[in-house]
Length: 399
Image (cartoon, rainbow, N blue to C red; front, side, top):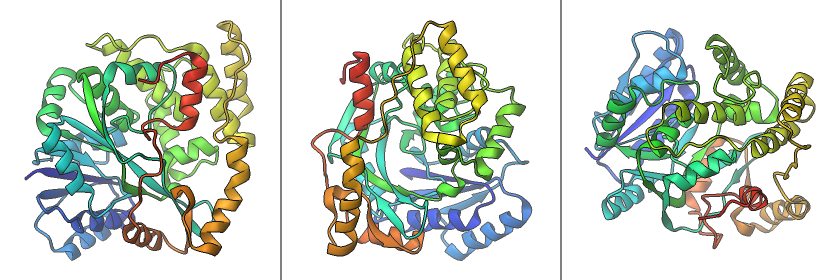
């Protein structure tokens, strides 16, 4: 078979069922689905029932021998794959119906070892929900790994970097990397760990600049919890797991647990183990700027201890007060209500940005499937506008 889609899940059977249905509804049929269930017994029973309800022999339900940390679970699950290309769809994601056919076409045309892609998201902060579509060109592009590593060194995480949850990799490549590194995802952040292994091992990868899936379930997202400072059960459990593992020893400030520092830890760990020589020292000014931006985004939820740690670190390294580049420009913030009103009252979709008013996730997914997103940007969506601004301020080239 051509694809293995791995759905790793833990104690979220209803969400995993949505992900599973999105794979079984594909217009490309040469695939298998591995539902890898790291749940407790009660939730596992409910998910087994959902898999049985699907009644499809392309679906395999597996369980690890015991409850695992997320990284170890992802590592276990990849070993169950039989397809030529392997990708992950978490239990907070759903593929568009044409995702695998598009990826199959790009992989066979280009001979890709690794191909990543973009995604839309459902905004669930408050009801009614909205569908957020990213800026994208519709093109497929090839990016050099050394250039992407240079972005990571400046604390910029490109939207299209291959993090396994937004990419497919050949099973031959996965086997080759495993023989070199031992494990690829058995770390604190398995998606970021996979990404740095790929960037160390391959010279280039392909990126399909189209949203082929939709993410949702932010109430269960580690990243959303850390980014907002409003920790949910998943982010609290993640922080506890980090503490059990001894913190973030490869990050410049190991005591701060947030999205930037988690990525910095995986970068630093790969720098200590790299084969390529691409992973240079982190740019400390960029690191401090971005850490300040994330703490500022958390607002009053950011702890005074974390601000004190950052300020002490900056003084020790002779870094001036951080230059925080906002998530959105003032113009975009002012225009947002107008765009939403046009969506609600006029039934149009300005700039393919937040659209619709949906009572449920399933309603937003149905809308997305019925209204194919169209290219809305001449620039590649591989980087976001804020990332371009940060790189320009740091004097880093955009190619």
